[in-house]
Image (cartoon, rainbow, N blue to C red; front, side, top):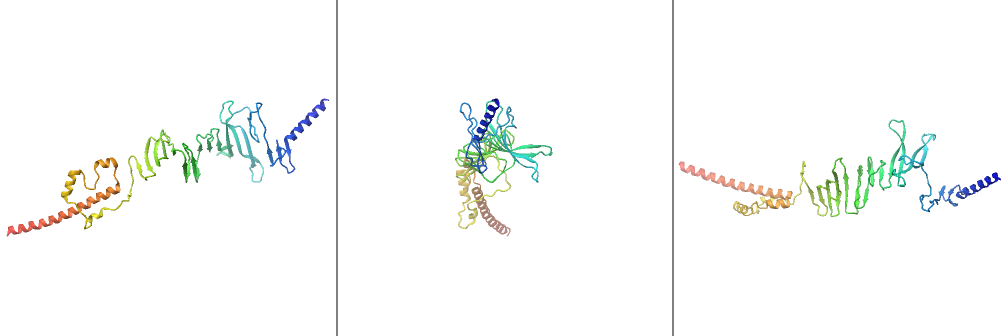
Length: 336
């Protein structure tokens, strides 16, 4: 009787397994479905005792039990031959899921995309974290502990990078052909030189592009340079040093040498200085302090004064020559 009971139980389990695993005529295998539409078709209905879905997936890979080590978890491995002759199969790539913390009763996870590599001394094989997704939403490339939305450890070559969002800051170590910020009130790229301050450049919605230092991307402590995109004005704070500066000007002061130029008399120049306190067409000290100096316009006006002085000098030299002639004639007459 006992043997008959065991036999019936085995038959029942076999029937249950057959109901859960179905093999179609075309070779497809179904788990949890009687109509598989692929090589392996899995349908999951796993729930907890309280009908709360703890495992909501079609295919479940369970990791090692009793551990929350960061290098162990549930993995899906990909095996290919390590030898060119097709022998000696090795697991050379895998998708690994590990806990993102060490706290109990916390289901936050971290997903790794890994490849196997041989160490520099060629003595041991290791796994490299090529891509890591953390429960915080941070993505790491070349690092298992990404600290920002996108954290790249190493050289990155990107043809185009587009960032959406108000306060999103991208930190990329590599070569970029294009970085595009859209939306929000500002955008900034921040460099950390290893000091307390940061070097950053970015923009505000008022059309101002800035380069500065500070601890806040929205309001740097110090603006080294500002560019007004609407007006085209460029502001540089501090000392500007250059080997050569080329300024385009509107016209030049050679008009002073035209025959119809109205050259002020020296008396007119003296009267203007007494009244205004500066030369004609030269801004006053008050104007310069308030509005600065237009280098191109100032150079033109200074050249105007130089050319006027040249004309005054030529006139005076002619008068001197006339006086010298008169003095010579007077001396000759006196001697006779």
